[in-house]
Image 1 (cartoon, rainbow, N blue to C red):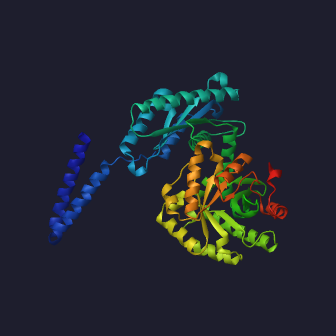
Image 2 (image 1 turned 45 degrees about the vertical axis):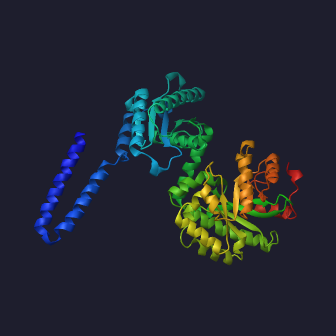
Image 3 (image 1 turned 135 degrees about the vertical axis):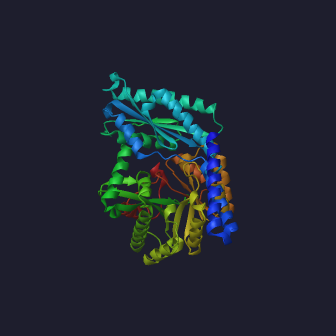
Length: 479
């Protein structure tokens, strides 16, 4: 209250000073200028009262790391993130959310000691803690200890918030220590791994996760991706891999989806899940899209000339939201004509978030006007925009059958029925087993696609595949 009173007195003083200055130097414009000055002053006052997102300076983190110097092999790091789930950012009470952060920080300090806790971001905290001496030589004991700490901490924080917050909050914890596959020399590397582990837990809808060899290997891949981008020359290492799209009535191959792969160093093959976040951070996503599209058009053209593919062969290419900018549609038309492809052969695969902004919607409409097709990936990390589906600014929907269960069957039936009524085709992707293929056929999907037929394969292997199965697949041999 005292702080509010001080703010009021300060702004009153500023207003009086501005009025005196205006009256002396601008008497003719005193009334309008005074009104503007009062408005700006009031706006400044109101802005100062809004809860601010605190920026945590790099220096404070460095000081914290200096105060916790120890052998990295004797420590583990927890990264605790607090997510407001299923709430639009504009609807969040920022002050209440900041209160949640503060309560969590206080609880962490009580549990671990304030010297071991550092706020890394508005919604994230890092904790450095030493292992018991008897655990230093045992990887299993270290992992078991982290599991125990994560379980206890998750329960404590959830209990705290259940009694003190009305916001729907999700707390996710990632824990990491130095390991054989991903040995760390610095505390910064340890914190970075714990953060990546927390992100894994969040994506997998788990309350906590301890970094295992799989997560450490994933982190190593990410580090190598970042270094690969920084080294330069990566553009030539990105190539399309092809996965056939199959007509379930005849089992003929009517098209293919082109998927970006990074053949790092010419031999390592990295999928988009590994490099896309790093590429987005470095603003390389649109460049990669253009590379993959250009190489895909060239490969399809060569296979059509070799009579391995019909001239009606469908080409589906994933495109990121970053590429959907002014001029993209005209660029795609130029590239298609340059490679002798008809625009109605080409289908751009988009996620539902691409249909949520006016700029990307305008580009999508331009693509369709020029004759290109557009497909909507309905289930993307279990999220689905019903408004995008209702507008039907697309020609195809893609249902992920990896997520298919008997409980979801009615949902899939409704989506497929609605799509057919709108004249929209349905591709069942993620077909990895015969049961999923049978389910997709029974539900009436237009086309099917997945590892049951083949993994995504490079151009030369796809040429061999198409040469062998030009007349169609014999599904009995695949089961």
